[in-house]
Amino acid sequence: MRTQICIIGGGPSGLLLSQLLHLKGIDTVVLERRTREYVLGRIRAGVLEFGTVELLREAGLGARMTREGFVHDGTYIALQNRGFRIDFKKHTGKQVMVYGQTEVTADLYDARDGWDAPVFYDVQAVNPQAVDGDAPFVTFLQGGKVHRIDCDYVAGCDGFHGVSRKAIPDDVRREYERVYPFGWLGILSETPPVSDELIYANHPRGFALCSMRNENLSRYYLQCPLDDRVEDWSDDAFWDELKRRIPEDAADTIVTGPSIEKSIAPLRSFVSEPMRWGRLFLVGDAAHIVPPTGAKGLNLAASDVYYLYHALLRHYRDGDDQGLEEYSARALARVWQATRFSWWFTTTMHRFPDQSEFDQRMQETELDFLESSTAAQAALAENYVGLPY
Ligand code: APR
Ligand code: PHB
Image 1 (spheres, rainbow, N blue to C red):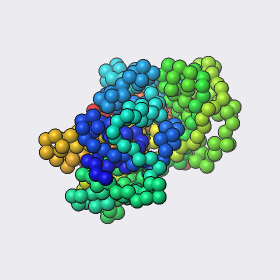
Image 2: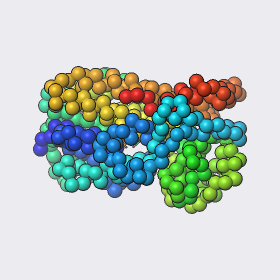
Image 3: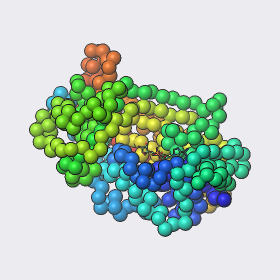
């Protein structure tokens, strides 16, 4: 089998890249290790930068997102039982869209139904080969048979645990990592959100976040020790702890209910350079991971897709490879900016087990400055709504 772009990974990165290229008549094949149902069952973050919204609309996915998504002009930061608002629109003229990533992925899959753009599910032993030459190919197992796809380029959209990053030689690849000494315990509940906008809460007992999916589906998170297990947390224990960490007015009005999903996720910052090796291009979590505090995971995948999509267009339409040559440096420049912001926001909002009293005072003073400084709030707003592509 032959195609122009072989895409490894059928998550947001792989699907969005495939969709955009397909609309320009560029052939792709997507290889996905799991089933479609499994991929759609993943609960992930839910804040889309304005650039991501524009790209999804360009891929033909605007309808349901526009209908069901929530446009937010700002967010609340809470500390010591008080809160203040960061007004994105005032500082940047931009907004964000709260729309679950699960919905984005479902919309991407629905949009491609009926297209002649195959996704191979349940594939095993995917192996990108000869990517440093002019005739790359990818082999994989499906239904007990070995398959081969010859292609012009390979897009490694297979996430942090995928195979693509490791196709770049160890002596070429440089990896940067910070693992945070805590996790996020998240729940979904069919209850009305406690606030019209998100609440990021810094509390001596630990970080808390109040978010939402729709007017009757709320998403809440609590910072928890790395060795906590989901079964350690009853719903009542979760709600009691959440009420301790958010401002009283929110704690007094929050509507609680049974969790319909409960999970613990670790937090890390991770960047792998370069994001290109010959005819292999890494996209999204295959190349970088950010802690969810800044809601940058999906949004960084979108900017990687944007850069690679336009580079491939220039190659096939104009015979110009400058975009492909510049892809890694261009994508990494934005990746590092989002990595810095996500690291700063995580470090400022969470309690660290080894935190000294001085560290504690620095954190509180950082937030006092954020509350009092228009410039500091504008800086947070610029990063949160998304730096330019
Ligand atoms: N072969 C084929 N598919 C694979 C392989 C493999 N060897 N390894 C992983 N995959 C698939 C996974 O099953 C998953 O569906 O690749 C996909 C990668 O998807 P994500 O991990 O979601 O990464 P990405 O598409 O880059 O999404 C970026 O969106 O998922 C959110 O916030 C999350 O930051 C992440 C962002
Ligand atoms: C979410 O709604 O899941 C969410 C929102 C903002 C974040 C992280 C997660 O920073």
